[in-house]
Length: 210
Image (cartoon, rainbow, N blue to C red; front, top):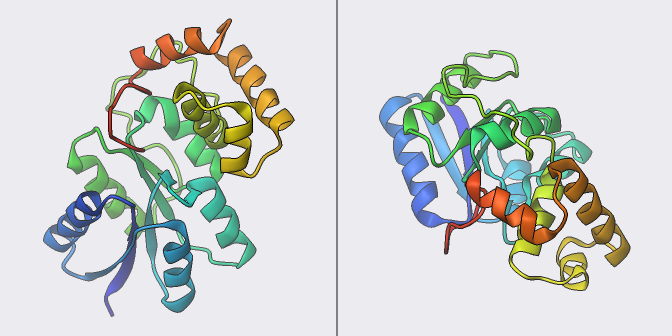
């Protein structure tokens, strides 16, 4: 029986690229596709998958929200988070969130291939990027996925009220997130935090979403 992999990403070119990679290197695998969070959950309810390759942020849901919903519905399959953010910034928090692996879209495709191989072989959750350069004193490594999403929204110039509406939070919670992020990154203002984020390639990709 063929293994089943669901590829969830709101960018068609990314989905097709991942599907092509799977078809080329894993002939024993059948794939499904989803372009948003709602479609991802619908597919997971209708079909038994062995692996989910999930974009960190899609228009209607981020990985945190989807994984929370999966746990609530007792859908227990390994997840590879696939995002534009560098591995050195996001891998640690994604593994804590419950992902089996984290792969950056900015890295070579071999890393995604390796991650798929390891997960399908049943290897335990853990870092697989040991041969990648470490980031020195990375100020964003401790941010949670929700904090990172709020941070990007702040960089986009959105107000606390707009961010609260987008992420179903209260404005006071957004303010708390903002203060916490400034403390974690050692920044005095959002502008200071933005400058550092651009140095770590967390912001400044026009037209590209995570």
